[in-house]
Image 1 (tube, one colour):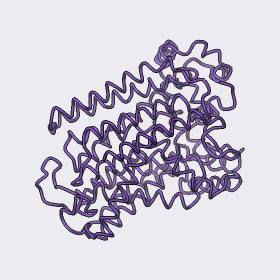
Image 2 (cartoon, helix red, strand yellow; image 1 turned 60 degrees about the vertical axis):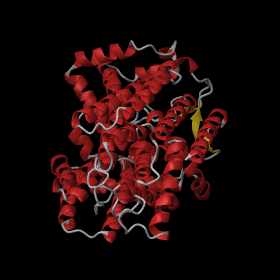
Image 3 (cartoon, rainbow, N blue to C red; image 1 turned 90 degrees about the vertical axis):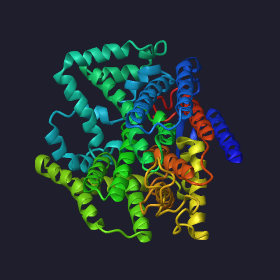
Image 4 (cartoon, rainbow, N blue to C red; image 1 turned 180 degrees about the vertical axis):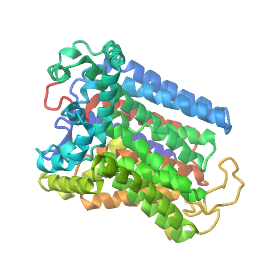
Length: 528
């Protein structure tokens, strides 16, 4: 794997050079580009570098201790990982122009229109009842007009909590304002206008709490990632995979933003889908349907995980038919439709027509966006490499090709023990027992193939002409998890030391991009 490591290091360096030297933004000039930071805050690098180093050392120490398959030890490692990721989120978030003040600034336009709209909501039921009319007949606003109401209601929940417990909200505000920001950050005109929009101190406290909650949600994505890895690997191997999958640059660049909720929901969805198929669990199937509903309540982008899951199930059952799938399908459908029905009955909110209206608005936006299909067809893979991380991108597509090569060209998918890449029979019945015989359950290699096919088809469809660094963020952790896990299941394996080097490269790219790319557009057009 040394050639891969050299290539990954070179690509990481190339992406960072591109970010630092792209004077007109990262993208296609005249159509769309991510903003560039002109004066990086190098003086704020201390904490991100220290926490990154401690994380890598901690993972190396945990790996040297040997198998840790007791439930208590395994979950202690996951808890430590979530805490480390959250602290890293906060530290990396301080690398922007305004330091940690950007945490609350990111709740407002141009980065985010949801919180500003939530400030105007006085009656949740009335807001939901008139939502379709608002997005169809009201002024067009890209974020609000093309998305279901989930993101706005996320902020409404924090505003209502602040109104109920004003003293706690003010305490949060005062504590957050005490964090050491960049000198004079509160006097930056854009931030000053943002703070003036909040007429009560409690509202600023709600904005801080909601923003920190989004970063916590991004960190908690490591839990379902660990659960997926544990289906086929021992804890000592699953923990670094969960860490690696949580260190995609996009999770730290679009921070804090409601999109940070999506990777955790996506991972939870696939964990439940796999648990339902492998364990014939009706409860897991129903829960997967509910999680899919939760994702689509925030964004139609969750059609991508749905497509990948449908392909995964179809391929798995084509190679290994199983009884009881109809019952599992009904349970998943019930888990999805029940909240749809409840929203209609309780709030007079027809999600089916809302989804249709959002799709129509998105199509209308794409039609008049002025973006060229063939240009974005070629640039989107680079955008994916930038925001997923060069090591994750390279490992995913190299492993995807390798698995397909074994499956179709060499016919190894149907034979037990075929290099560890049998799509329908991915591995041992118990992750801690490598001598166990093959099972007939779908696993990481099949997930890898399904996700790769879905991404290729989505790119060819032209539905996402730009911004895939954000729009596809929900599956980026899954890319690295499925590829590294599939590779580790194979005879060649993924050496622990190599995985640690990949994690280090992911961290380097994350910190470098956070210093050089204004992904949320906070100060786009202003002089740095």
